[in-house]
Amino acid sequence: VVIDGTTEDVTSAYASSVYKRQVAQAWYRSDESQAGHEHGEGMSAAQRYFTRSEVFERRVAHLRQGTGLCRVTDVRLLDAQGRDVDHARFGETLAVRVSLECPGTLPARAAVGVGINDRSGLQVLQFMSDDEGVELTAARAGERFVLDFEFENCLAAGEYSINVGITTEGVNPNFPLYKQSEQILDATFGGLVFGSQPYERAQVFGKVRVPVRVSRLGMTEGA
Image (cartoon, rainbow, N blue to C red; front, side, top):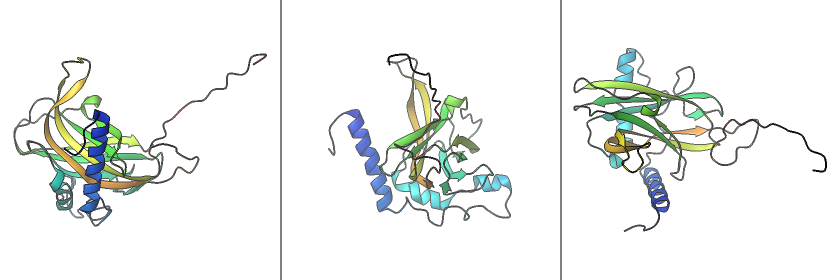
């Protein structure tokens, strides 16, 4: 037993442990696998999308989980022009591009999740494909997919890792309005790292800065 406590305490400790193991194994690095080394010049677009990344495989191998019925083969971070980047300006449009393949028969209600974690292992952003109406359906084994998760960078300055998982989603019996993951097909940790640059117009406190409207309503007499 490593830790015994509340769900929040234990999951936070686990996330921190995962990050430390990533660092110890040097998976959490901006190295030769980053921008410019996997563009696949001279290849077709389909070949570039579905070329298995050997560096990605090495990074995630030791912490990989799941049945393997569907697997993440590569994760890329792209700017608005579709270029690979390892640093992003605050507020710019980014896309996490996830390449998948299904060696086996894909179960029903399969969805892809993307988590963005800070250096301590805390997940600060999460995107689920089925929340946006996109589920995976495969007519036969061997099918391949590419999903783009597009968002505006709202992260404070620092380094972040991108973790990607594939799960089947069901209804939580205790809370019918909420979904829950029933089966993990693949879970990859630390497959990609990127840096978020400081916001030039203001300081960002906390982990994210979201758009907000501030209205001045005036003052009443005697206030």
